[in-house]
Amino acid sequence: METVETVTEAVVSEEAELHQTLSELRDYEKKNLKMNRIKMICVIVIAAIAFLTALILLINVGSVTAKIETLSKSIAETSENINGVAKDLNQVDLQKLAASIQTIADDGEDTLLTIGKSAGEALAKINSIDIDELNAGIKTLSEVLEPLAKFFSAFQ
Image 1 (cartoon, rainbow, N blue to C red):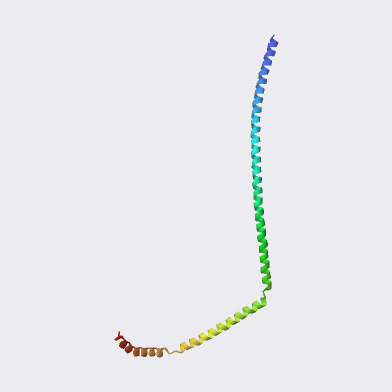
Image 2 (image 1 turned 90 degrees about the horizontal axis):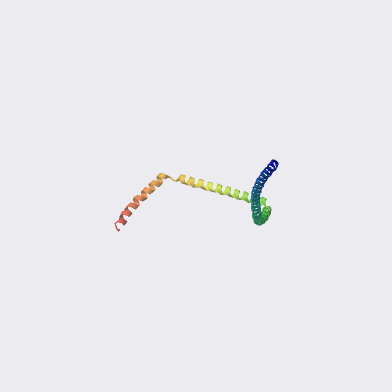
């Protein structure tokens, strides 16, 4: 009987261990299920973020494309303007331009020489004035005008 009791006790003990193991396994599976749900939520959030990022990039690519087209048109217009300026510069006769500049320089030189000569003549005339004689003339004029000034001041 002892063996039956021992076997029964062993079976009960193993049943308790099995029950304990099953309980631990159930807790582990609950935790695993919870973790899988969290992982799934994270995957969904990451996928949503990736989708929104791709959508924003596509919108910006359209905007950038429009800007590139505008820039391309501006570059083409600028190129046409540069070509027009180059044609105008090719049409300029540089020899005539240089001759005109030389003529202007020569005329300016002649004008400066004439001005210098005239200034020298004027300076010579100013230097020829006798200052003492001029002062004497002014004094004489003052002596003549003084009695006239007194005469006319009496009528005021």
